[in-house]
Amino acid sequence: MNKVRFGIIGIGKMGSQHCMRFTHGLIKNAVLTAVCDISPDRKKWAEEKLVSKGVEFFDDYKSLIDSGKVDAVLIATPHYDHPVIAVYALEKGLHTLIEKPAGVYTKAVREMNEVAAAKPELVFGIMYNQRTNKLYRFAKELVESGRLGGIKRINWIITNWYRPQAYYDQGGWRGTWAGEGGGVLINQCPHQLDLFQWLGGMPVSVTAHAEIGKNRNINVENDVTAFMEYANGATGVFITSTHDFPGTNRLEIDADKGKLVIEGGKLTFTELAVGETEFNAKNKKFMPRIPSKKIKKSIGLIGQAKMFFFEQHTGIINNFVSAILFKTPLIAPGADGIRGLTISNAIHLSAWTGEKVVLPIDEDKFIEELEKRKAEEKIKSKKQA
Ligand SMILES: NC(=O)c1ccc[n+]([C@@H]2O[C@H](COP(=O)([O-])OP(=O)(O)OC[C@H]3O[C@@H](n4cnc5c(N)ncnc54)[C@H](O)[C@@H]3O)[C@@H](O)[C@H]2O)c1
Image (cartoon, rainbow, N blue to C red; front, side):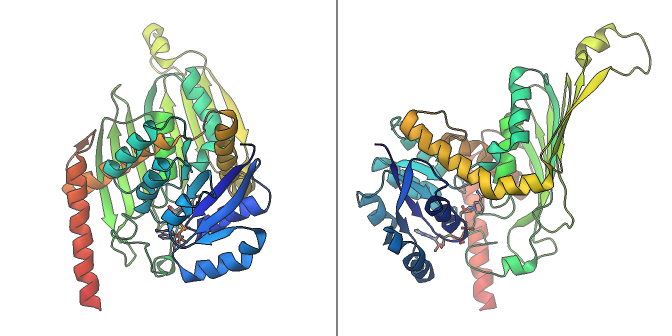
């Protein structure tokens, strides 16, 4: 194979942008040959924009996957379907790239991962496009090289996912348990929850508070504060919302050899001359300061926006194609999707039960609680009708 033939399943807002990345020549060594959507409007769009370019339209994902016209699929449907379609594609021998989140609940995602693991000849990736962000990549290097030292505290305030009522009033699958599987945790934050664990590792327990419809008329959470504990005694706090304006996007990691802050398109690493543990063991002064130097990297807010629109998703798709053709390591392996989702499910479960959740989560309990919310939502919408 010298060009990977791609099919995109779900050509709504995100899927149609992915189509354009192919038709504008941004994806190397690959060609878009097929697309699929269940919506007549999207079919019309595909007929106008893609069919003339030789792209075939399907209104059913199984027909696209079975068509023999694609070597790989990119799945950009609503969340519940990601593992369902991915399992079908992998079982039919297609390389598979899923949009975030990996799914709504870990049980389905774990089963998807098992299918993928049984097919090591297939590339399985996830669209964690923010892993291509240069600042987070530098942070990852600092963590992995040991230069940052043992992490003591990781805090992320990510409240700049502002979504007004009009966003939720678009209707469809958004802002509901049945359609989306949650709110800010499952739609907007999977990127940060992934980076949170990519940089800080997995917590051993989660205690959380999540408010449903704060300042918004929605059924799902849009204001979350979660506290995490780690095996080495470190702690983490993750705060997110969709109703604060202006919001904040600040990641702060305190570690033995320094402090890392990423905010506003800038990274600042305050590197200690000597690790705090070692310093403290020898120090005799009451109020000392540990000598340090500052290392700064900046891409700025405009650079960050440019990267988001033109480089991040394109980077993940190009890396996925390279993994198929040249065995390049994946930036975001599909199997990693369960990690951020586990934190997300644990936050929901803790908020629902009012209890600390110890990982691994009780998958059946999570599904039971989710189903309760879906049933209540159904009754509510019947009453409103
Ligand atoms: N990585 C990112 O930066 C990013 C940004 C936005 C959205 N997303 C993700 O992309 C996915 C899609 O989001 P969106 O905003 O494009 O939603 P959307 O509603 O605009 O598009 C989803 C499309 O999927 C179609 N669809 C639904 N079920 C289908 C099925 N069974 N088979 C084929 N098509 C089906 C719908 O008709 C719709 O056109 C979600 O997982 C979302 O979280 C990712």
